[in-house]
Length: 244
Image (cartoon, rainbow, N blue to C red; front, side):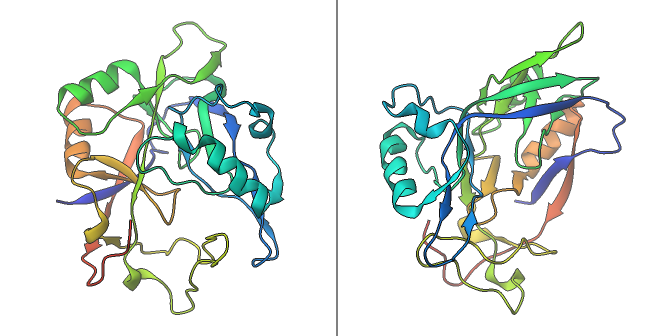
């Protein structure tokens, strides 16, 4: 199986944009080992935090001591989808914002968020693509014939191969897990970490990189679904598969 990264197609000629943020989120972390605040995180639009008693703790972005971040993680862990990863700054619930312009089938408000028009998602699901679930954002459009977008929940399941890391690569922080090495210029997917049950996923170690199978690419091209571009992502099997 061949794999591809997904990015906004800047040559498509569409003028549409979406701007906003998520309804809830974990705070960033002040790590005693890293000595500096940070946040990265993932997004789970399927997760509704309204059952949490201390809901106000998830409404304002801010750095917190790592012990407070860990306490908040435990409050919401039962609400997460299977295999979810919680990094500082992880966000939940609907994407809230505004949009305007002329759109293709897909739009990416930021590199790590992917939205698709409802009819396009239904076509992809009818093709038998695996693991595609969409959740409605709260978007305001100041125009007629507003599109109906759904945000795809892209789960973190795979990792990069160690061979693509630069020589100066440092291991994650042993206390908070912060990854200290930027995304390599020539990423290499670790084939031993790739799921067989998903045609769309993201990386556990670099959450901004969205990855899809050639089945996903073929279906989009055959159905004429536009707004995103694909770049081939080389793969290599690791001799010592990392723990999931």
